Image (cartoon, rainbow, N blue to C red; front, side):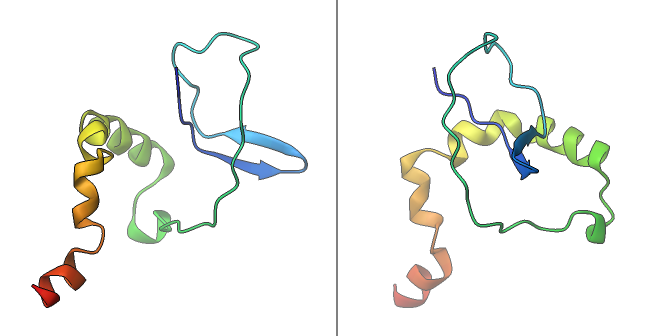
Length: 83
């Protein structure tokens, strides 16, 4: 089973933004640090609770968005310009 949960590294600890579902206590984890390409939601008028609701409502699409076939859209504008 592979579960991804977003979090933030602070003071030597990882703070999870949400609790993972169906993950047993004591499960092994791998932490990967990524560059932040965050959008400041507050500057867009979206608070943490609204963001949580939005994330939950869009979760049903994540399998489609993350499928290998969708990578064709990663550089859609460049491909369209060349096509």
